[in-house]
Image (cartoon, rainbow, N blue to C red; front, side, top):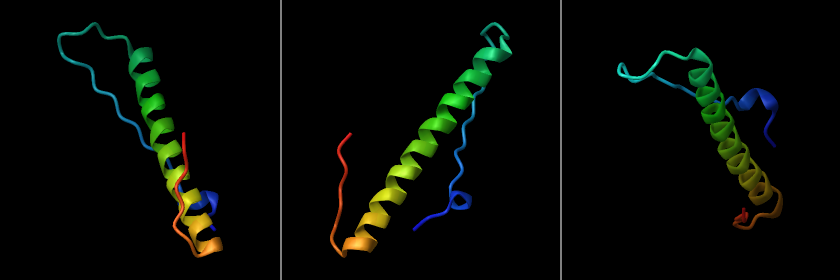
Length: 62
C-alpha cells in the first residue's frame, strides 16, 4: 500500500508573451494541472494496491 509521502502532484503554467499578464490565471491553471497529475497518480496507486492485494490484474472505470 502507498503512503501519502509517495505521491505529489505537479503543475506548471507559462504565459504566452503575447497574453495579458494575469498571475491568478496562471496559478489556477498550474493548480488544476497539479490536481490532475495527482488524480492520475492516485488512480495508478489504487490499481497497484488492488493488484497486490488480490494477485489479479485490475482496471478501474471513470
